[in-house]
Image 1: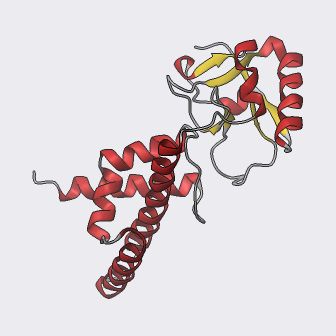
Image 2: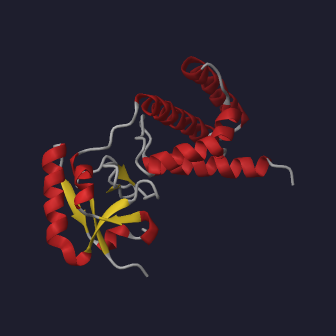
Length: 204
């Protein structure tokens, strides 16, 4: 069992009922850590240092950053974290800037993730074939206007495939932010629905 740690979180998150988002080594708010951008952590015995870091982050970012106790960090694995040190001071001040090319790629990724999740949620909630067909027509029109084409089938396939899973990973690790009305929890649920639906479509 990993030792208890303290994390920095937004005191007033955009989605209070969603998963906790913690500050990572890239200066972004993430649901989970990764090898490239682990979550910054302080030992539970270093509460004063964690609180001082939260105050520096609050002042630099113009928002209230709070220290969350270990009970609020259930499910975080040792490999997802990085003990805070002076080398990570810049992460308190703001996110590491992406290159222009990466920023464009991530923006497109975020837009597709949000659009396709909306379609999957609407299609999954359709009560009958007529309603499903209406969703299909609306989806085709919206995807043609935004991405040059697409359908319900392509939305499910993208979310369930490698590109969709990479986009979801980018969202959970803080590389991208939700671009529309859906919360992180709703996006993750839509991705799960897409994977389940695609598994049912696979030949047995």
